[in-house]
Image (cartoon, rainbow, N blue to C red; front, side, top):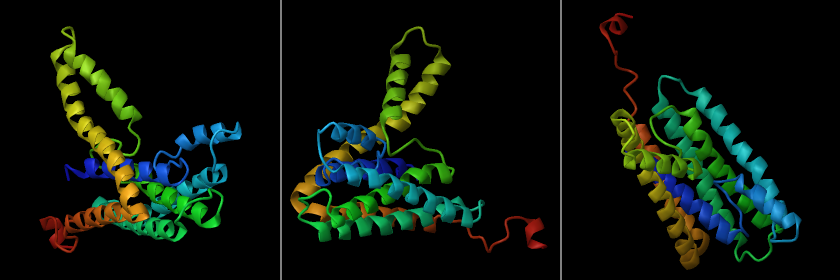
Amino acid sequence: MKSEDSVLATIAGYVDTLSFVALFGLFAAHVTGNFVLIGAEAAGFGQGVFMKLMAFPAFVAGVVISSVLAKRVRATTPNRAACLLYAVQAALMLAFCVAGVGAAPVVHPNSTPVIVCGMVGAAAMGVQNAHARLVSRPGVPNTVMTGNVTQAVLDAIDLLSPKAPSDAKAAARERLGKMLPTILAFAAGAIAGAIAYRHVGFWALLLPFVALVWLAFKAWSSQPDMTAPTSAADSRK
């Protein structure tokens, strides 16, 4: 599905920004960004250091769950693995929504409901980060945009350079065509996540939940018919 990376990038930007504004600067998708915040809070700048520390094991748990589940399905049916991971992430996203609504109003970063809410969000995005590495498909990274932006700038330089060979320009143009929509989708998701949280709070997480359910359905419906023989040799078995 050509739009899959853009949808996932929108979800990542949306959820990361929502968690940042709602949970005292927590990065749910770009979880390593919490290192910076933990360092700042250790020096007395900011709050919620314990929640950010707990986001790491929750994120790792999401990755581990994804790995175990993806390896349980046959490698010959990547769409089945994709469907399963989308469904798991959708379930965790719904749990993130419910936990956030239950924790509201969020006024203390070290309260148990707030910490649990942040952990569930980090686990959900751990699944998405693991998905791209567990299910082989053409695409670009969709949760962290630093590498994409760097490559996009390099490709733009090649396209503008009169000394760049034609084959290098063709490759750069193709990469840029894949990365630019993802970068823009992430940015749009980030803006939408902040605006949605301002107006409806944690109920805003229902939108990425619905998007993930749709992706799971699309992955399921595009699975090959494993009951039908794929060749004459198979039909004789």
